[in-house]
Length: 410
Length: 102
Figure 1 (spheres, each protein chain N blue to C red):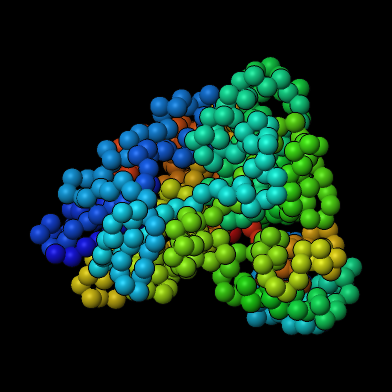
Figure 2: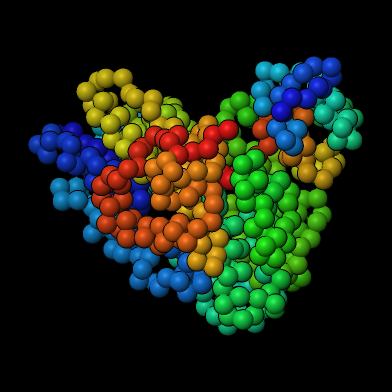
């Protein structure tokens, strides 16, 4: 018997277990998946939870439910990966593997910025990238009476790079509905040169901040959070005051990657951009947020990666050359508030452009333009996630590689 | 779009970043810097070289990353490229500015 070991039962790991089990003979290959946590979260829901659009129950389920029969599920902490010995140490046992799939994801590291995880953490300084943060923020917003709301992004790369902007848009919508928008001074703070940094997006979407009366502070590289003065301070000495700070802290790969000496400065693992094979160990593959590839850290990206990676693992088992196929394809709905959303579809080389999706002319979804239909698409996606995506079921008409059909490319 | 820098025709984005690094040279860098009010010194060149190496290696750039670079500290980075050090230094280095997905 040979062993495939999957580390992490989040979006990517769960998908890989579902893809691989039916394709590998049970009398030849064991598949084992390890994750220390019992709960599987629908992370895109963390954007909606603070605004009472989703409930707690809609964003979490027991992870084991999504692991297919015939896959060995171990709920234990991973201590160390030892790729030179093809071994992984768990809290109380050591597993050997023939093929390792690392899907340990990324998470927030607020301790990277001085004062961020200080005395006001989850009091008037919040994240919404964790279940706890998102829920605490919901409770805060329910009773908040207004003031300066600062939505802030620490540094790239982050999971779901559009989420902070979506949060600002949804906040505008939320306070408008509550009849208190005039009491909220809303500012978006980014380390980048603008809220939109790509040419076509700036052109098509530049109006959004103005329309929603959201102030913009660019090129802000945060050095510290001042919990007494309630302000964020950047390395150049700029200060921005807040009453309520919603921040996206630095995102990093899991500590097990650091303990195993396998990652870069941010614990992301050097990975081949197109095959998803480790650059250091040929029987190690990386998927999802754990990689260092320059694609968005998003569920759709993991979904497209999973299709390529499944093929590549089968090719690797057969001793054949891997497909250099993955193109950085991402497909993301972006909430703009007031029951509208945008859709973007892009890859390593092609920036988001206007057009229709997935079919030319008829759409029905519009690319890089606000529509109610896109908003329904985003809400429908929760069902698709739990019922199709995690189970590795292909989503109709949406191919793993980005299609140029329907896109207005120059 | 096309622009002329240091007497050479180059392709740049709307906000003046080179789109093809192979067109970059030190004269072009000097002219971009001058347009941004920066006079290049040896320290500037060291930073530019480091940034180019990072981009070539596929490492994401951030101001915080500068702290770990061993090349300079963040205070000096701001002093060399006042205002938006990452935005300015990448422009002079002929590499894309740090971007999000939209």
